[in-house]
Image (cartoon, rainbow, N blue to C red):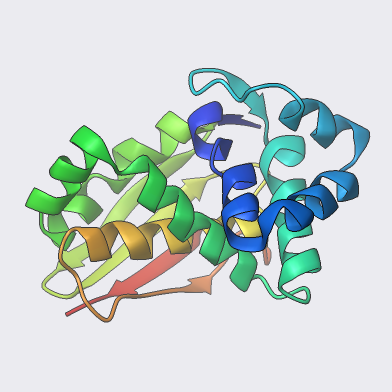
Length: 185
């Protein structure tokens, strides 16, 4: 599986902004030779990178080093990614749309960042949505949690408050699909 450079370009800046230069050094030193190779050159937004070395391993290291092994680190990384990625023209697109408008486009967004992948909107109503990831061959819990954080922040930017994203059904845990249950006011 592969991940688009634009999806991983915020990983190292997240570490540096949140945990400083010393944290960035600890993070880099913790990576395997293969993951270090990905992050030793500038991340090109339009290039595709191997999912494990470019996203799964680095986000696992963030969780391990800075969050005591808690996958909350993946969610925080996803929130940061949404903040950075939804700036400029994208911020306008997200901020003028409603949360339901943003959710409606979920199926089109995921495949632009991960390949192969597929997502569909199972429910989308006032204050509630269910988004189902139906294809993601190398699904991992940190990927799911990072997506949760990204969705939370994108919905907040579009005007949602008290946003919650939960994963009651998970490919990473052996299910055929991953379901993201999203609520907001």
